[in-house]
Image 1 (tube, rainbow, N blue to C red):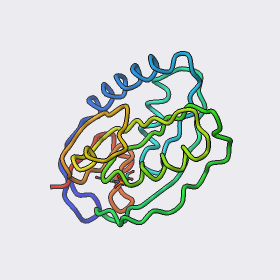
Image 2 (cartoon, rainbow, N blue to C red):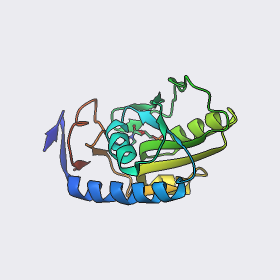
Image 3 (cartoon, rainbow, N blue to C red):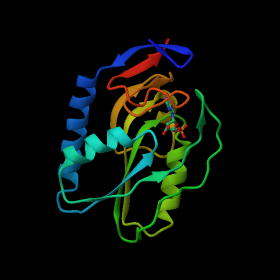
Length: 174
Ligand code: IMP
């Protein structure tokens, strides 16, 4: 299937994603049953995952979106803009960062550093996908949906040049 100017093939189906989201939600619900976490989905890519996950977790919680984009095209530029969108106090909060995909891990390590400096009680990460090279990174998610090789994927919130976010399944670049 063609997305923008590249060919992609089906990689993870909507049904597989659904099952995984339910599993992740069950773990989070169990771990946070006596807490009231603040979910921090990182825009743009995690908006669909976050919407499904947070509803499935189904415990009292708050949600605040932040943005920290480093991507143009299919390669990380390695450059990060500052985190925007943090309006409420994070002091003493149990934060769950919701990430779509962990590639180099650069985005998450910056976000975690920034959040810890704000006096949070705890900071954990849930990522739908973790790429191979992220597995050696110092910052690791507590919850991981799928581990995959270092390939480029789109769909379920993830984009290629802005396209493909609305696809219910996840596709891999040919
Ligand atoms: P990192 O800082 O290198 O870990 O990059 C993480 C961010 O890059 C993710 O939140 C995505 O927005 C984007 N990204 C990384 N890999 C992909 C991919 O395969 N497809 C689409 N976006 C990606």
